[in-house]
Structure formats: structure tokens, C-alpha cells
Image (cartoon, rainbow, N blue to C red; front, side, top):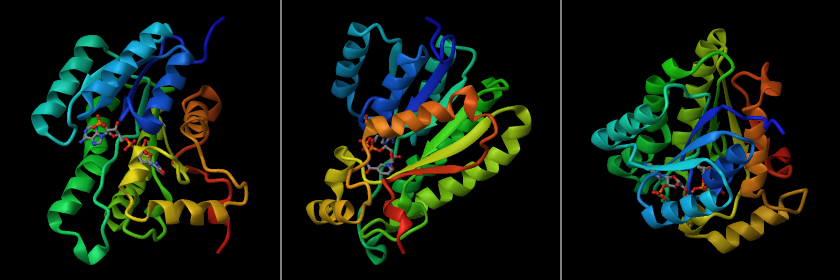
Length: 251
Ligand SMILES: NC(=O)c1ccc[n+]([C@@H]2O[C@H](COP(=O)([O-])OP(=O)(O)OC[C@H]3O[C@@H](n4cnc5c(N)ncnc54)[C@H](OP(=O)(O)O)[C@@H]3O)[C@@H](O)[C@H]2O)c1
């Protein structure tokens, strides 16, 4: 059976953990060769590579802190040695400091923006020349890019910046046949949520305010990314698809 992404090559940042892992798995299950980029968690990445191999999935984990020039270059060199063409680029990697706005130093902001905005900007600049018509770029944003979430000023500001950057890339790359879009999930239970100082209270609040009564899962996000990376999404350009069980519908 011919799979949706047979003969396609995908790069997924943050591709070995959390939402990015679900995306790597989904794209590979649909036939893509996936380069799953990761930063520090080597053990998780190695376990993921073994799991992928056991399931006959073509997933290659590549390590490198995308915010450090030398590491970024080594990731690009490794990618270049393994493939000439990239058909799909997904930015799921993110980090951030969770504090109230007035507590955020320039260093905190820089740390957050370096991975959430500058890393993907640099990746798109490097990789878009290897992307032919029909290629797709998808970013994972969050409701904090447009709304207020407690302790989320740094990440929210970086997501807002990323969204604007993606809309500009979307307009500039559409004439070349490259579609750029974003997915905005509601709260997803991954390791990232453990970093919130008010985790339990927040979970409770989110569930109560979500009409579907369910949290979004990494697989829910992977399904929308799969669609945006498919040929069927051809005329969707520069959009953000919200998947939050209706949470952001209410004022
Ligand atoms: N979880 C949620 O509730 C939620 C909601 C809305 C949107 N999102 C967005 O969804 C995406 C994935 O979130 P998640 O919850 O799956 O996050 P996560 O579990 O914390 O995973 C983050 C990933 O980013 C990678 N990463 C972080 N800093 C990096 C760096 N400097 N260089 C290279 N890789 C780096 C990590 O790699 P290592 O672990 O190897 O360092 C890890 O794979 C993020 O963009 C997040 O903002 C999440």
C-alpha cells in the first residue's frame, strides 16, 4: 500500500519527546523518512530510536542545541550528509522561563526566544532552498501567542513573534509552492506542563473551561500536522488551526 508520505523527507525539531515525538511517529507511519532533532535528552532519543526501529519506522534522531551556533551547524552538516531534499519541516521544539513579566530578565527572554523563534528562523533560511513545490512547513504555537496565561509572558511573547514570522514566510514562500501554517493546541499533558508552578490548579481550570471536556493529546496534534503536511491542505496558507476542544471560544 502506498503511504501518504512515501518518498518524503521530514525534519521535526523537538522530535523525540512530547508532541514532537507523536508528530515524528505519525509522519514515519505514513511513510516519511524522519529526522527527529533534539537537544539535551540523549537517553530519551536513544530509546525512541530503538522503538522506531522495532516498528520498522525510518526515524533518525539528530542531537544538537539549535540555539548554539556550532551545534546548529553540526545539525545542518549531518542533515546535509544524509539528504539533499526536505519536503516537510515541523517546529515543535520549545523552551521558556515561567515567571511573571516583571521577573523576567533579558537572559530569560533571550533563552526563550533563541529556541522558539531564532532557531526556526535559521532552520527555514537554511532548509527552504532544499524544499521544492509541494513542501510544507508547520509550527506549533500556543494560545499564549495571542492571550494571557499566568507565568507565560516569555513563551507567549515568543509564540506571538513566531506566529508573525510564520505568516510572513507563508506569504513569501507560497509563490514557490511551499505552504507554511501553524497548529495551536490547548493544554497537552507532556513534560513541559510540569514546569508550570500552578500545574494542578491550571489543569482543573482548563478542563472546566473546555466544552469537549477533554484535553488535547499529542496524537490530536499529530493528526492536524499530518493533514497540513498532506497534499489536501494545498490552499491553506499562513493559517493557525486551533485544537483545544473549544476552550478559546468563550470570552
Ligand atoms: N504541552 C502543551 O500543553 C502545549 C500546548 C500548546 C503548545 N505547545 C507547544 O508544542 C510544542 C511541543 O511541546 P511539548 O509539550 O511537547 O514540549 P516538551 O515535551 O518540553 O519538548 C520540547 C522539545 O524541544 C526540544 N528542545 C528544547 N530546547 C531545545 C534546543 N535549544 N535545541 C534543540 N531542541 C530543543 C527538547 O529536546 P531535549 O529534551 O532533547 O532537550 C524537546 O524535544 C512546543 O512548541 C510547545 O510550545 C505545547
